[in-house]
Length: 166
Image (cartoon, rainbow, N blue to C red; front, side, top):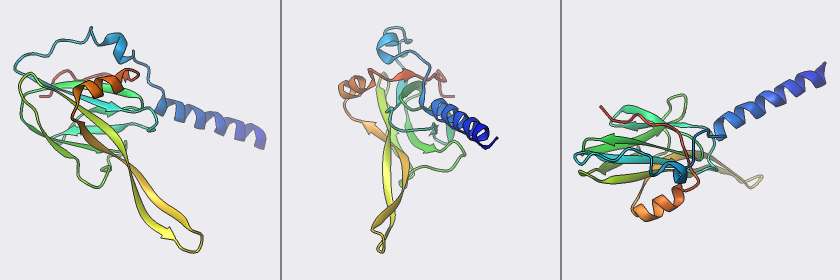
């Protein structure tokens, strides 16, 4: 009975991890030519996240949830050009990172690439054992080079988009 219960627990854990880390959408390279053109009076944000970072985080623009950044995925949103506060929360709504997000100015016709990067914080070092204790969180980082961002997106999968920020 105990072995059966442990087997079921193991399967549930594997399913949970797989649901956090396995994107289902097509790769960026497969759909980049099929994405809608950016309207000239709008700007576009791509939100990207590398594969090695686990479960989703909620992405916010000016206190409005615009989507989730999944591991190994990207999504985009078109916005009216303005200043935007980009910040993240974990799936339970707790703020990620230490810096409160980033402020980004978008211009007409501009495409911006925001990456979710891992941020490690050391909370304390146990002098007796020498172990380091810390916290891993995500922080949004604006990629300055569009060419570099597009190159890094080649293996990312499309997570879905709320086409326009209202």
